[in-house]
Length: 192
Image (cartoon, rainbow, N blue to C red; front, side, top):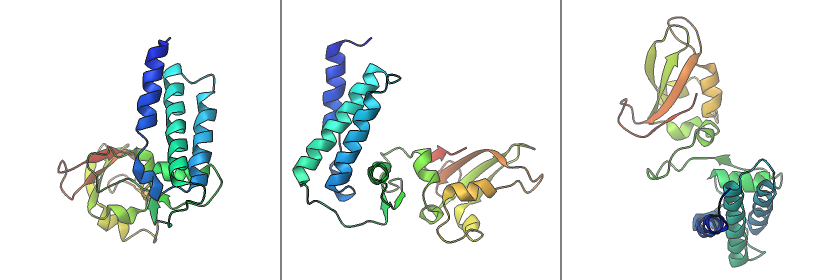
């Protein structure tokens, strides 16, 4: 079990890390609802003390941000939001734009869940690297070429579900999405 000082440090560090950009994605009501959600998760007996301290820190940081913007705060709607912006709306059963990774920030790690839920069009300059589960063939497919066979607004996940090997017709066992048209040229994240 973690020492109380360690848990306090985790709490304090996490509370101070709530990013300011959330002001542009969350209304006051979303910040408060998400803070309530994090506090509820922190009380689950399956949660470790360290994770509980982190969740309580996020809740505290969101409440501070909510106090800063005030109850009337409701930012303009954006076409996409971070996963946190998505969760804030989900906590109140409100519709949300797609949770989208911050592609313009290479210092922020791409998360598979947010990539899979994002519109395929965001990744037009990227490539899918697929490995066939049947014959083991690996190939790189530019997203732009896949996009021509997808419906408008299709998500990355909906396209990956339909991928099949040209040689044997089997679904891929592994799929990565990689920045740029050349393998090994940029950031990548495993999706399957």
